[in-house]
Image 1 (cartoon, helix red, strand yellow):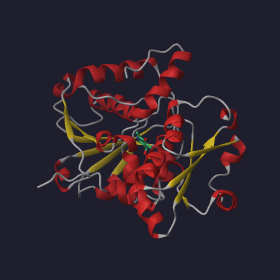
Image 2 (tube, rainbow, N blue to C red):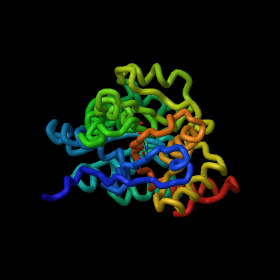
Image 3 (cartoon, rainbow, N blue to C red):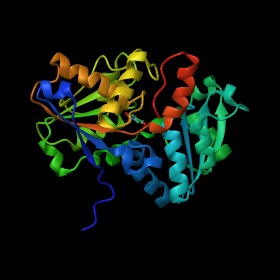
Image 4 (spheres, rainbow, N blue to C red):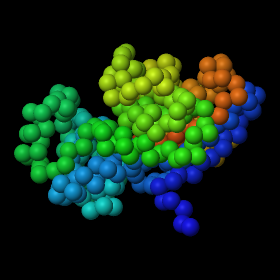
Length: 305
Ligand SMILES: *Cc1c(COP(=O)(O)O)cnc(C)c1O
């Protein structure tokens, strides 16, 4: 039988701290599944692309910051599946400047880039703004920032397979919460889901509760390191060390912060000794090139690429 093309590999993570606490940690390598589509972004696009096709659209419009994995993935998906793509990018100061690696890839994949002022970008969620966008750049299928909607959650639930019911705990990074919502939906009875936020937001749990039902999930309180995209020398050293020890590359925005905090939770006993964990490697490695440009400016250690 052919392997299921949508089943990612699962890597056993062998580290002293895990052995000491009797914790078994496995990483679902979504990052390897569709490398051009940056891990979980394929899952989030899958049913949206099918809906766009069914509704007769040949064009996708979406939103994102200059380093956005979602922008990168939407451009790649457009190229792979035959959609025109247009990205509305936060920050009109970027207009006319050399493109960073993320946006250069997006344009290379055929995405048209339009830079918005921060004030305009802040209105991206409003019906009036979206109507204007469609009038100017449509007709098109509109994907939300970060790609999270009901169809995206359905796709993310497919990260899990029946055999994953053996894990006590499922872990993932959290941006908009679509991936977490998918895991909660796909979790087996009795399984707990632990999300590691990449951003600092008071009331994040309440916000996510609006579309993530149930009580079998929670958020880590200390993974964000001060905010979205904020990094420390400790985090970068951790990511480089993790790669040396396991051969697995992480990104500093999502997967690095998750594992940095997760191993801390193992050390502190927050995660019970003896637990068997499946953590999702959601990808995001494309952003490491651009991150290194920022790190160099700040005189921080660089990520080994
Ligand atoms: C977008 C992204 C996330 C966050 O996913 P959400 O569904 O928005 O919570 C996590 N990891 C990576 C690598 C991403 O690109």
